[in-house]
Each structure stands twice: as structure tokens, then as C-alpha cells.
Image 1 (tube, rainbow, N blue to C red):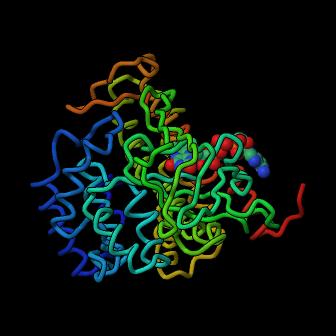
Image 2: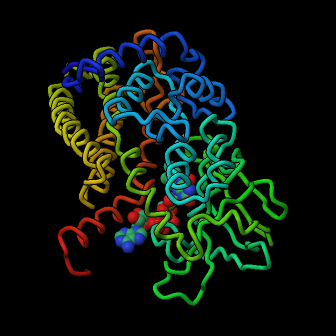
Length: 391
Ligand SMILES: Cc1cc2nc3c(=O)[nH]c(=O)nc-3n(C[C@H](O)[C@H](O)[C@H](O)COP(=O)(O)OP(=O)(O)OC[C@H]3O[C@@H](n4cnc5c(N)ncnc54)[C@H](O)[C@@H]3O)c2cc1C
């Protein structure tokens, strides 16, 4: 199997090939070496200069329309850009602004909201976080309790959000709040608000993860006043607005890049440790590589349909489940390749590079939960596609 990602998408047109060459040269000259192949989580402030470089080159938001500063790029160009950045081990900008809320503001925001928020998202000057989950509302998001009550020109927000990626770094949060507690069904009483993270009454506390970093935060809202003009998409329209994001999010979570990287590392590492001599190991590796090739073909097909807004409802959940499971199986195999060194806290040296196997294994556990848990995505398939009755 050829591990150059570029070769996996071999039907690029002449323009695509030219674009790939242009991106490859630019990324080689501009990707910051100190951010490449990092195993620790790169916090938004560290990432900002790289985001800004991409912005200045016009490549921060390939999928945004040109009129809002994007590239209006074809799907293939988006894939090429993404792959060439990942290829040198460089990080991509966080998705919360550019991929999640930016496109929603473009579709559903007022002209004032577009003028106010899109430039900062594009340049990376403003960091965004997603305020959906609460202690009692994760999979069952429609049960969220954070209340917003209209008081003159402001909403007054009270409640608690948690598991907010980058909440402690963010300048802004796009939050789902309950504006009609009597609404039936429950999701008909939810509104999306854009909340300034420096608002009086808003307390942010980082949460330490098993991996040892503080990716998440929780937020406490105590009579936080949010101007009415920061409502996005209309009163009690939040559920519909939020739905615009989740399909795309599942494509990001299920992307094959993790499995590609882990299988390549597992192959190299197994030769170093001797795990390669075990026919059982080689059998598992080959099986995974075959599964990955099949998934790559499906992912590409699904991404094309998704960008043409023609993807059936099952595709995003299938991508999340299949891509996520493959990534986890590949991280497990990497642990087997490492043998006795695997559970160590230290990095393992790998052909001039280094890998922290235990940390990658932990990293992949979270894929079961992000973008809707695997069980919830299975439920979507069973109900909406297979039309199975409730258990
Ligand atoms: C990496 C990562 C990043 C995240 N980033 C954010 C973020 O930026 N903003 C944000 O708002 N949230 C974020 N989250 C939170 C995430 O959305 C929630 O963790 C998720 O929705 C699950 O909710 P929960 O943790 O409350 O678990 P629960 O919903 O309590 O689920 C616990 C278990 O029960 C299962 N379960 C629940 N309901 C059912 C059912 N009906 N049928 C079968 N099984 C069920 C689940 O599959 C899971 O295994 C993030 C999570 C992760 C892992």
C-alpha cells in the first residue's frame, strides 16, 4: 500500500494536480516546524500565527464563498489543501469558527452579524467554542436546561455548559439555550445565541482530561446579559440551526487521516520491536489496511455527495462510526506494534520521528463520544434509514 495520501486520490484533474503542487511548495516553505508532528494538543494561541498565514495566502476557508473571503473551492481542492497540510504533520485550524459557526452565520445570519463576526473567524483573530452539552444533556441534547429569558433588548442567561472544547481560550461561544420551557416537542423551545465570553456573570473553568491536557472547559452563567441582536436565526429556531452543523462535524470526526497515520507508524514500529515477526500481527495489519482502502473509497464518494447536498441521511453517521472505529482499531494495533514499550509515558523514537503510543490510544477513545456517540449514530441509522421500531 502506498502511504502518500496524495496518491490515494489518483483521479485529480490537471488543474487539481497543479493546485496540489502549488500547495505542497507553499506548505513546505511556510508550515511552522515547531507545530509539525506535535503529539501534545496545540492550544489556540499557539495556532494563531499559522492560521493567520493561511488566511493571508487566501487558504484559511477554502469552502467559504468568495464574497465572504473564502476560496469558493471545489471539494477536490478542499481535500487537497487539507491533505497537503496534514502530510507534513502541520495542524489544521480548529473547526469551531471556520467549519461550524462561520457557515451557519453565512446561511442564517443577518448582514450585521456577517459583517461583525466573519472577518475575525476568517483571520483567526477571534476564537470560538460550541456551547451545546450540559451535565444532564449530552446525547439527549434536546433536554438542555440553560435558560435565556428576554428582558428588554437583552436575553438573561442562567445555567451551566460543559465539555466545551477550547472554552477557556474562546472569545465567543455559539450556544444553544432554552427560550421556551413549555414547548412540545422540547427541541422547539431552543434558540442559538452568540455569547461574548468576557460577559459579566460568565465563569469559565478548564477540565483536565485523562490524556493530561485541558482540552475542555465548563461555563457557569449567572444572569449573563446577551444583546438581542446576538440571536442567530430567530427565536426558538436553534435546533434547526444546530442541525446545519452536525453532518459536517461527523465528516471531520470520521476522517481517515488518523488510521492512515497509525497504520504507517505501526508498520515501522513493528519492524523495530520485532512484532513484525508474528504472523498474527501481520494478518491484523493487512486486514486493517484492506478495510481502510474500502473506507477511503466510501469517504471520497460520500464527501462528494455531501458537498453537492445530495448525501442520504445515513452517510454522516456511517462515516463517523466506520472512520472512528477504524482509527481506534489502528491505535490499538499501534499499541501491539510497540510491545512492552507501548504503555510507557515516554515517546518512542521512530525513524527520526517520535510517537507516544499510550497518548494516541487515549486520544482515540474520545472519538466514540464526539459528534454524537456511536450508539446515538447507530440509532439514527436504525430509525431513519432502516425504519426499525423502538426497542
Ligand atoms: C472530543 C470531544 C469534544 C467535545 N466537544 C464539545 C464541544 O465543543 N461542545 C459541546 O457542547 N460538547 C462537546 N463534547 C461533548 C459531547 O457532545 C458529549 O459528550 C456527547 O454528546 C455525549 O454526551 P454525554 O457525555 O453527556 O454522555 P451521555 O449522553 O450521558 O451518554 C453516555 C453513554 O450512554 C449512551 N447513550 C446515551 N443515550 C443513549 C440512547 N438513547 N441509546 C443508546 N445509548 C445511549 C451513549 O452512547 C454513551 O455511551 C465533546 C465531546 C468529546 C468527546
